[in-house]
Image 1 (cartoon, rainbow, N blue to C red):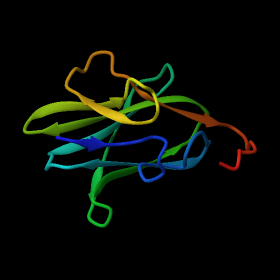
Image 2 (cartoon, one colour):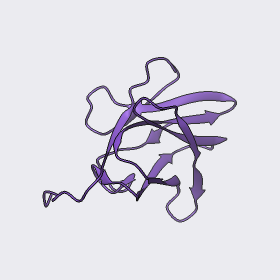
Image 3 (cartoon, rainbow, N blue to C red):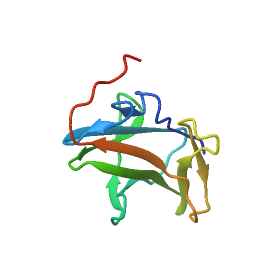
Length: 126
């Protein structure tokens, strides 16, 4: 199975980069085989993880979910994929450049990070 996610590509995560509180963030994952389910696990720093099931979008051919991030802080996330009653984890790649990679080892998952800020901050035009 191949699953594609890149936190630096707006095809897979919108908006790019840090987000202002009370903004919805959309995540999308591309999977090349039939799976049973995929879940986004999102954790605010020092809080309990929350599961967000993802649904298949026939137009984009990707699994998607949107979450409104209501309070500022650091958030960490990864994806859990179930295929043939086995679980896989889509975690941040070792190089740390936004790509994800699949593992079956659920210990010490390398999470992606999302920063949510409280007020409007000027963004660089890149």
